[in-house]
Length: 135
Image (cartoon, rainbow, N blue to C red; front, side, top):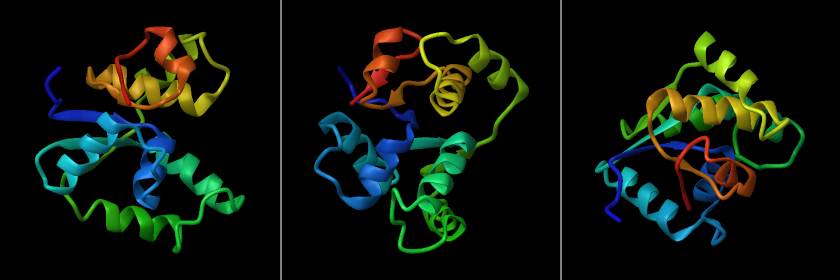
């Protein structure tokens, strides 16, 4: 399968990349590498930004700086694009029944709105068939 030119980030995928974690899947890591080389695009849904902020506040992730600064740095690379939350995404997320996690539902809805695959290892998302996944 050929590499995709654009994808959407799930929260854990972005955090694994940022921390250099070996838990990042091979295909997801390849997409991040292409983004770092400015050869691909990765959309970061606003729901991911919010979830990262909550995880940092609860000390579940260490960004080594405030979330605002982390994302300001990330978005200096034009390969990483903030993807705004729309009412359509909220409606779509509400209609997705494979998860009770509002962040997962909003992130999947963003990928569906964009018509792009989602970088995720989440088996519930992958198994739902709601969106194509890459890991």
